[in-house]
Structure formats: C-alpha cells, structure tokens
Image (tube, rainbow over all chains, first blue to last red; front, side, top):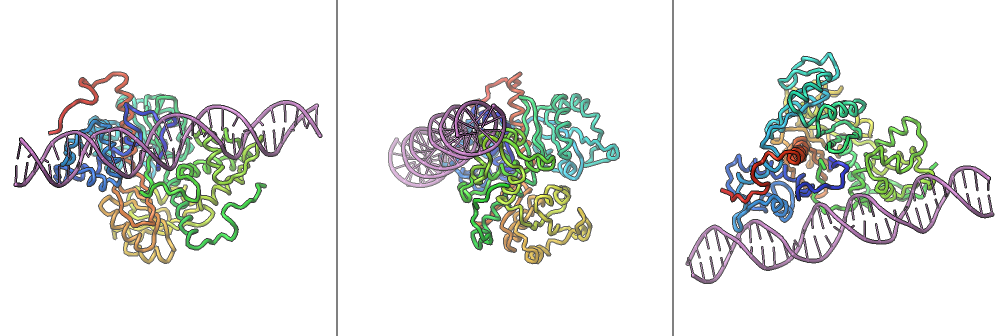
Length: 237
Length: 237
DNA sequence: ATGTCTTTGTGAACGCGTGCACAAAGATGG
DNA sequence: CCATCTTTGTGCACGCGTTCACAAAGACAT
C-alpha cells in the first residue's frame, strides 16, 4: 500500500468501510473510461475486471452506497459515475495548495488528474525567493509567507506537501494553524497533527523497497546465493 | 493505503506478513535517523513513536525477523538497521529504469531517497526524440527503443513507469518481455502482467480523492448542507 | 402469463492484522 | 547471589476485509 491511514482505529465513516472508500476512485476511473466510450451499462464482472478487483467485492462495495444495479442487466454507467462522485465529494470544488515547488511539486501542479476530479490548485508555495513569480503550470509561485492569507482567502482545506523532509513538519503546523484539515504528504517524514486532521502519505522510496523485498525473494527461490541460513542465529554486537 | 498489492491472495513471503513488510521501510527510516545521531539503542516504545505505529505491533513485526532485542534495554540501532536492510534486500544494488521523463519522471530521477537505499538509476527512457540526450539528474535521456538492450545489459529487474496512461501498458509489456519482474506504476491505469511479475501502483489523484471523502464527511458533521437524506431512495434513470 | 436465464445483493465462513495484557528475560544495584 | 525494575516477546481475543456460494430479482422470449 503506497499509503497508511491516519492512526485512528479504522473509523468507519458513515458505515462505508475504509477499504471500500479507497477503491471508489478506482471504480470511478474505470467508469469514466466506459462513459467516454458511451457504454450504457456494465456488469459487476466486467467492471471488476477493468478495475482489477474481485467482482463480489465490487458488488459489496456498491451495496454500501445503497447503489442500485439491475439484476440480469448490470449497473447504469452514468448513474454510478454520479453516485460515486457525489459520495467522494467530487461534485464540489476543492481548492488545494501545493507547498514545495521542486521537481515533484511542479509535477503535481502539472498533473491533469487533479483538475478533472474537482481539485483546483489555489496556489503554489515555496520558501525559495528565487522561485517567486516564476510560472509553473500557468500559476505563479508565491512565497511561503503568503500561506496563511491564501489559505484563509480561498477557504483551502487540503494541502499537499512536496518539500524536503526537514521542512515538512513546520509547513504542516502552519497549514493546520491556518485551517487546513487534510494533508497529502510526499515528504519522507512522519507528521504529527492534532485530532481532526487527516494525513495521507505517499513515499516513493518505500514502494520501491517493498518491491525489492519481493524481488529478492523471487531471486532466492531460483538460486539461493546466501550460503548460510536465512535466519542465522547471530547475536547482536 | 495509497497502494494495492498484487492480486495474489496475500502470499505470506517466507512467514513475514505483507503488512509487516510494508512497515519495515518505515522503521528503517526512523532507525537511520537515530543512527545518524549516534543513538546506540532504542526501546520499542520510542521507535514506535518515531515511526508512528503501535509499540506492540512493532515488537511483533521485529519478532518475525527473528530480531534480537534485549529485555530491559531495547534494540541495538546499528544491528537493526543492518537486519532490516538485509531483509529488504537493500544490501545489494538494484538497477532501475525510469520510463517517461516528464515532470514526474524527472522528479523521480532527482529523488535522493533512491540512491541512498541501494537503488541505482540505470537509465532514463522516453519516447520523445526531442528529449534524447538531454541531461536529467546527471543522466542522459535515452530513447525508448533502447529499452530492451539496456534492461538486458544492466540486468535490470525493476522498472518505474511515469508515462501517460495510454502508453503504460505497452511499456509494461516491453519491460516484462525484456526481463523486468517488478514494476512501480505511476500511470493511472490498471496494468495486466503475467504471473510472477509484481506491480505496485501509486496514484496521486486517488489519494486526494480519499482525502476529499473524509473532508466532506467532516464538513457534513458541522452543518449538513444537503437538504435530503444521505442515502436517498432515488432510482436510476 | 409463465418459464428461463442472467446478474445482483448478501449471509456466512474464514483468515489476516491489531492491540491488550502478561509472563519471561535480562540488566542493574545492593 | 538475590531482589527489583525495565522492556521484550507473544498468547489471545476481537474486528475488519475478503471470498464463496446462493437465493432473490428482474429482463426477455415464447
């Protein structure tokens, strides 16, 4: 999982399991593709294949939405797109600030997947005064000291942190103090936030390390290059 | 979780639960920080706090490694760094290719967290001939048609996909055919791969949508702006 | 109207992950 | 050597998530 949920013990939000919520964007993406091809209906089997999940799981997920499929036919694509979008809150506009306009921040600013899903980049912020005013993805980079006023003026509730690890906690504190209640963290640090603030993290290096673990295991099955056992009884120094 | 595991039903790799594997990089990061401050030992309580997890969970995780703490004292930092690194396969060198050198690909190429963890960027590939030869993070961008020879010559087993969604499956097929068995996918598509190939995905937009869901729920608790009920008995068209 | 066929929605069982709580282990001091 | 104190390692119970398998629902043809 490229991600960890907040520490709170799996708060089941309004009866919709967290695991289901995490899959809704996946379904939405597949459904949007179908919608663009003007496909009127899909069966749970087809949609599950497109989303890469088990069909029973998909049906159960939709049952939490109180979603209405038609037995013998399937689900109405347009209706489902609307339902899921509404459930995820994508029918409203979410202003977002991105802090830290390095390579990653610029990539995020340019990422098309945001705008098309109801997310609007309200501002790009960076501590580097040399960057100030430069256009990235058509938006001017503004200085971090404008954070508080920008968050307040635009009613920003979601912040994206793409700063170096060292700056992440301070930026978080300022975002939270300014009123942000959801944070997407790309910096490789554990952020501490008060109750009521959600943090999701994406760590590029962690994902790669998990892959390396499995890769090593695969290699070890074919030819184990390790002479001694896998769990040697070596004592620590 | 920003991530989904491969479809295979939770293959417990050599007795180490998948959930534990996903946390090892987290522990490693915290331990590395302690190591740099020359801290000799940590208790499970301290380390758990630094990693943002429950201490009992951490102790159980380490018990899978056959790890040796000392009762009454804690864990030896250096020893644990070594153990986890070895377990994750980070003591060896992992050549990686990055395909798609747009904003995101460039960000990944520049990301310091890779090199410091045993990952070496063997090559940057892009289909755009205009990019060919340009230096990104000190490496020349090479044309996608060199993929097969580069993978073979460098024994690359891990590929990172940062292309647009439309190109991702084709790139995947070529990577797999060339011998890559682990893929980290940043493109917003479901990739199909043969058995034995691991795929992990990171979808920036999905994370944001999950945050939006919780954000909406929070807002709904204070003042519900929706006049009708949350689960209206509206029939599909 | 009736029968057949497709597909949904869900009851139930199972397995994994989590966290409590405690016994065992070892360090430390007298 | 013994007592005390700290911290690990884990047995156990609980809850969430997943999957199977099937009954109910509806479409469609005759």
